[in-house]
Length: 182
Image (cartoon, rainbow, N blue to C red; front, side, top):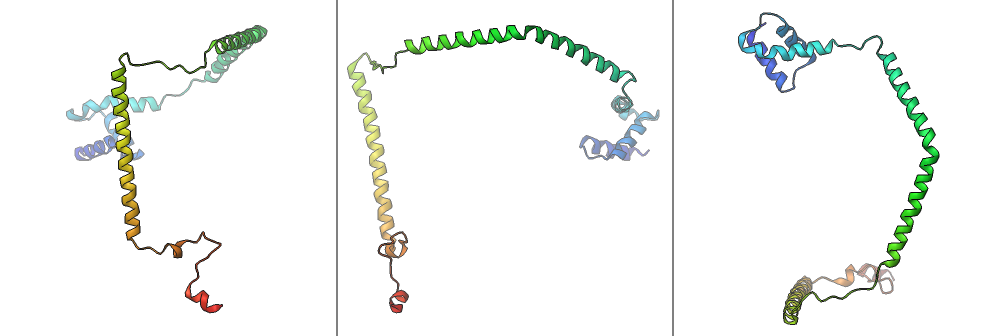
């Protein structure tokens, strides 16, 4: 086979663009004894693929699988069947104990709000509170300014709101065409 063709097939193979037929050509080429020296490094790869494709299950595989599954399943069923009453009792005891512990801790829990001072120094607390209130005041002033600017912008648009208002059913807007029909 042509060396150039093999190189192009290898390039396509590494880019995952080969067809099944092209991969078989590569496997045949690398299973042949006439492989150039620069391509001998790929012989184990393609011989491994060919060897693994020929692997089949033994004739007694199904029988061994059934025996393994059957023996394991029987032992597990017997073990569970013997311990089933004990498991029910253990689960019931754990449930009762868990509920008892939960009720105990819930009843001991103090649900009153606790107001604890976080500052040892009253002046530091006052400074922190003042700082927080100043930030809040600044944010409120800024939002008020933006709201007023938005209202002025909408007012400057010179929109006839009565013509747009379709929700006012008590006093609908009459147009010229409606007035002339009456």
